[in-house]
Length: 385
Image (cartoon, rainbow, N blue to C red; front, top):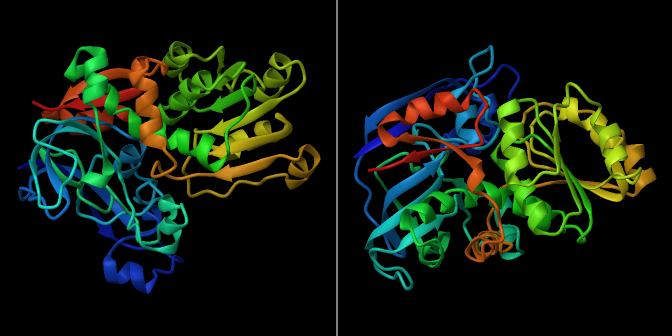
C-alpha cells in the first residue's frame, strides 16, 4: 500500500550518550539528539493485518501535527527538531479517523463499517505507570507515526482499546464526512485537555486563562477554556493568520506578543488579578517564561505543552510568592480525555470547526507537511479517497 515514510540517519550528537536500550531498539528517546538528515518519502509498504484484539482500518482523514513538522524540519546541524521518541524508518501521521474494514480475533465492540477516532499513545497497560493512572508516562510507550506505523497510509491496524466510535457524532451532524473531519481534531485537543484538566487539575468557572501559541494545541486550549467556563480567555500569537483563528475559536482578545508586553495585558484585562491558568503551547519558553512569571494570579498554574530541547530559566521565587505551580504534560491517553471531548462535540458544546484551515489530498501529503512549516494555519487535514 502507499504510505509516507520518515527516513533519517542514526548519528548521535557529539556529547550525547546513547543508552544501551536506545542502541538495541534503535528508538531514540530524544529524536533531536540522534536522528539527522530527515527525509519524507512516498513509498510502498506491506499491507497490515489485524492481530488479536485489533482491527484493520481504512484511513479517512489525518491532521498534520506540529510534531510531524518538527520531524520534517532540521536544525543547522541537520538534526530533526522533534524532541520525543522516534524509531525510523516509520510511516508518519497520528491524528487520524478511519473506517473499520476488518476485525481480528478477540475484538468485542467494533464492527466493519463503523467510524472511529484513534488515540496515538500506545501504552502497555501493565507497567507501574500505566497501572497507577499515568499511561502517558509508560516507559514502554510507543507513539503512532513516530515509533509505531502511522496513518499517512491507506490502511492501518489498531487495538480496539485505542479507538473511539464516531457514529453518534456523525448522527448529530448528519454527515459522516463532517464527523471524520472533526474527529481528527480530537487527538490534539485531547493533549490540551490532558494538560489542563488531568495533569493540572483544571480551574474553577469564572477563571482567567491565557494561552501562549495558537497552533492546534493552543487553539484546542482556547476552545476547552471557553467550554469549561473561563471568564476571560486571552491569547498571544505572532502569526496574524493564527490570531484570526484564535478569535474564531472563542478567545476574547488575541495579541502579537512582539508588540505588547503580555504580562501587562493580562494584568490590565483581569483588573490586576492575573491569570489563573496559563498554557504554554508555543514551545518558546525562553521568550514566554519572563511574561508568564509576571502574570500568575495567586495560586495560578502554568501548563507546559510546548516541546523543545532547550532549557529555559525560571524565577522560582515567583512560585513561592504567588503559591503558583508549573505542570508539564504529554499526550492524551487516559483521564477521560477522548470520551470527554467526544461528548462535548456530540452535545455541540465545543467550538472546534474553525481550527481546520486547509485540506490536502493524500497524494499531496508531503506538500501538506511542508505547508505546515509556514506556521500560518490552524489545522491542516489530509483527506483520503
